[in-house]
Image (cartoon, rainbow, N blue to C red; front, side, top):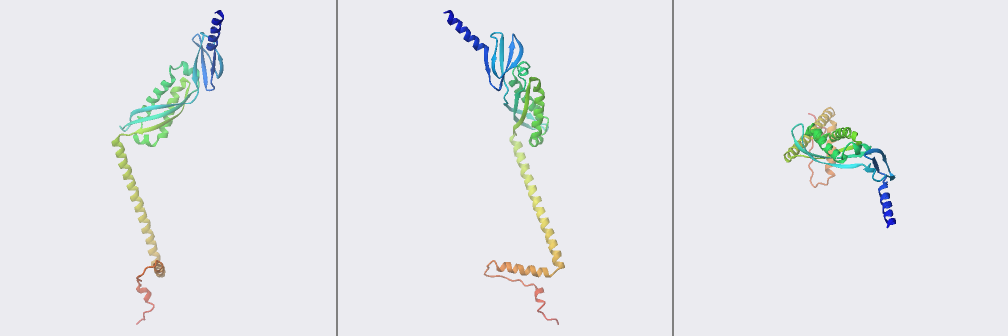
Length: 245
């Protein structure tokens, strides 16, 4: 009976004393409530009852920021959500400086997203998303640095606009497309008129160019295989056959 009890104690001691940490894990060791060091990865030996270990993962964390109601600087109400990427750089700080760094980072990201998006106008929020992402990343990284956390990337995922705003923007885009089409059409007509003016000036200076163009037109008409062809003959072509009085 004694040997069985001793074997149970040994198994319990080994289970409490020996820990194995993966490559991406670190263990913050507390001895009688005080942090002594951070260990890992690999085999860790603890003193049962006296030592306590808190595991911390060093892998990159991807966290969704729930949609936030935001009123932009030009008083437009939108819903904005984002995603943040961060990792623990100092396991000791992430354990002792903040109670739950995942929850704290999530709450900080939500408030920062509302604050930053509320300081810009809707057009800037839609057109300069990269600038907004950089600003969010800078602010979050500054506030999480005392926790031993590095925010690497922040991306605004989706901006949900009210229906009436979507309709107004669609009308604006359609009007802009029509304006561009009219400008392009007018530019084309202007260039065509300019070319015709140049051609008229050349023909006025060189009348024989008109006759050459007329002959080329006749050749093009005859090559089309029409059954009936009308040949308009300018009077100028007949002047050479007309006798002078």
